[in-house]
Length: 122
Length: 108
Image 1 (cartoon, rainbow over the protein chains, first blue to last red):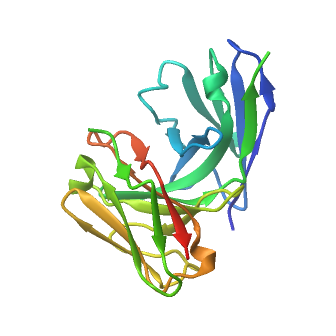
Image 2: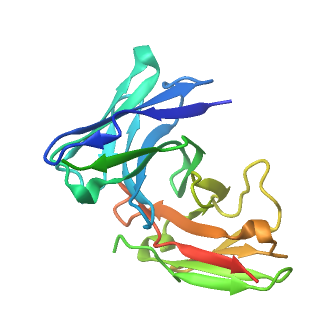
């Protein structure tokens, strides 16, 4: 079965770029589904960051769009998140997830990574 | 509107039924999916589509939708159901996903 594992630096300096990778095991990054990033600030709710299809087509949260890039690396069976110009408000647990859109009327995220904590601090 | 609104907290007596609601204009077009999150754990999908449960999710969880409101019902609540619950759906543009504000469920 598909498993996801996030990795990346746990500490990023303000104004720097947060870079995370999600490794996909037990399945192909080129399968017929989207791949998604979600974050959760300490003590707060879930926030959708964006999604990417294996074709490279991506959608981003409008509130983050100017700072976010999600990319896919087929040769490594992984996808990545880059968030630029970070501030303390970007401190959060970052999750990657597999997302299905079997019909135009609904989506769901059925497999999640365990999450990785990223703190923004000097 | 791109917002999905949930009650911050609900409580339910052990063995009773609780309904968690999620309100948003986009729910007139899209079904919600529902996620259970326990402390220090990743979210878990419990309901998706019209009323589908992933393998391994108890049939005590069910979903429904009417107008701009989606609902998650837990029948026969147990201590293990204590968690935060989030709805998720497309926004009205259809190009973005959005999570609800979350509901903390306490089983008394």
